[in-house]
Image 1 (cartoon, rainbow, N blue to C red):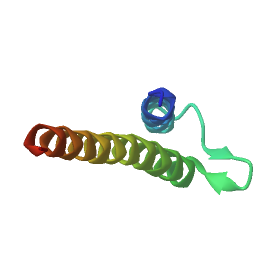
Image 2: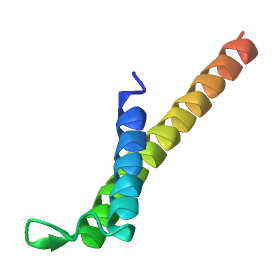
Image 3: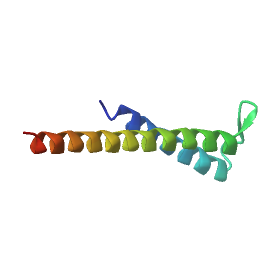
Length: 76
């Protein structure tokens, strides 16, 4: 299992932050028919979802591995 999903999520969050900064400075008003704020929020939410999902899955795998190790140690 790689950390690619988490790094993609970090990249999407950085892209959302840069879109917000560009909007705040008045460099960009819309992306196609959508306002920049809506695009930045959507991209940021997807990034956060990827990061948290990766962290939760890694935590779950760590718990399962710890339980397996504990069962192996308690065996006959």
